[in-house]
Image (cartoon, rainbow, N blue to C red):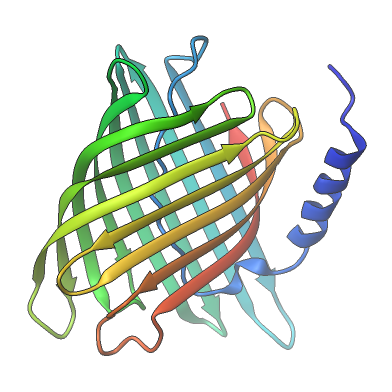
Amino acid sequence: MPKPRRDVVAIVRWILLLACWPLWLTAAYAYPFYAPPPPQEDAPVFSGDAELGFTRLSGNTNSQTLIGKTRLTWLTGNFTYSLRGEVRNVTKDNETSAEQYLVAGRERYELDGPHYLFGFARWEKDRFAGYDQQLSAIGGYGRQILENGTHTLSLEAGPGYRHDRLREYDDERLMVTYTALDYRWWFSDYADIQQEMSVEYTDKNITSRSLTALTARLNSKLSLRLSHEIKHNSQPPDETNVRTDTTTSASLLYRW
């Protein structure tokens, strides 16, 4: 196994330093589209990853934060399927300040050339976002703009449907126009940068999501990840105080 380069070692040290700080204490996070990338020729039929972060403070401040994410991916002919789940819970002085859950399934069908079709369904529940729960179903067309050993870039768009269950008002059933991009840059053998963005347009509001992540691989299975997530709702429910939520986190990522 080749020795890590100095720049990669510096990146790892930087992430380790940041991991020592309680970066998971922010109260909200975004849900970008997480498109499964095009399968490589030697890709395994079944694979997955799990990301976990936990912090606990005691003394003058008593709080704990748990964040967990997992994704399973499997291949069947021209289809790529993925199933992912996320959970986050933050408590301070025995009171919950954040409680969020997400389950999503997605499929990608490879067409001739750099084209593909996609579809996904997503259920999300955020106790402090003004929605009791949201259910979305979206499908459409995607195009692989770049695909080489260093860069990948895909763009996609399509129509969809979203059911918003509100706590204080009647449910809303909305037609959605969806656009998204996924860019990844492998700038060394041990590290990469990922940028995902998506926008969902409805006649009630516009929801934009962004994920920027730096991942440094420690070995073939374990990595360190530093990420920054943004979610913006142009017109949230009345009981919500802010339109933009951000989260910065450092976590361990395990792949198999």
